[in-house]
Length: 383
Image (cartoon, rainbow, N blue to C red; front, side, top):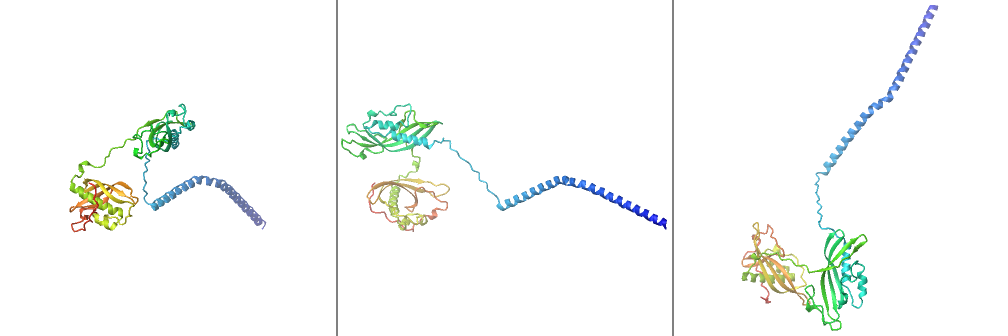
């Protein structure tokens, strides 16, 4: 009995030791696991970052593709900026020149100092009259208008500004009047007669080049202005004399058409106007009557125009006419009629610059059974 009890205690002691050893081992394992867990996220972080970047890129590509699909094909227009080779001249420089030109040509013989004071605001290093021999002046000058006619840049600080000045000059006496030259825009007959006390009043037109120097403080004039001649007109390049019509019969018919058509056209009678057109569709549907009526057809010049690409030929009639308003005032006008010759009669295609349409073929022209145009008025016209 005692032996059995002793063995039992020993067995319980061994079992307790085993349990104690097992607990110690578990504690070691737990401590070991805790030491590993904090290092686990560091090894996964780079992979997770790469994965996020990859899916973000894929999402961006997907969204971009969806937007492009929704917008459809885009047309990119190439914009070409065309820059002028001419240098830009400031408006202040041009205004300075016109202001000077106005003061330069404004004077009164009874007050010479007034002009000197006005001119002094523009000039430097030249005489106080800016070149005008004031004591030789025999009348008064008033500027009607001063405009910019041309402008050139000599270098970044020097400019030649051409001004066009129209002025009224009143002579102090009639014994030595200022003769009207070719630069005057009023004929001699238009000058109003005056008595010997007030003298003559004429209109003068002058082109003056104003040399302007641009400084940091502003523009100024340090050399004398100069005068130039009128701009020469160009030569006409329109019309081919080889196609001019000299046949008297055609010219007579062209003048007859011009007189009848323009009289009706100025009256605004669209119903009667249809008789003169080669096709009713070419005639205007509405037409406002003019304040002028046709007086006479002075002369006409006719050209035969040969069209290309199979288009029918036509005649261009340039008519010089006199029109009259309700005050009885007469004015010369030039009208251009484009007409076709069909069965011995002229019919209008258009007024002014004309180009035939591709669908306007000779089949649109009137046939012999078409209603004739009204006869021209019995008013005689000059030959």
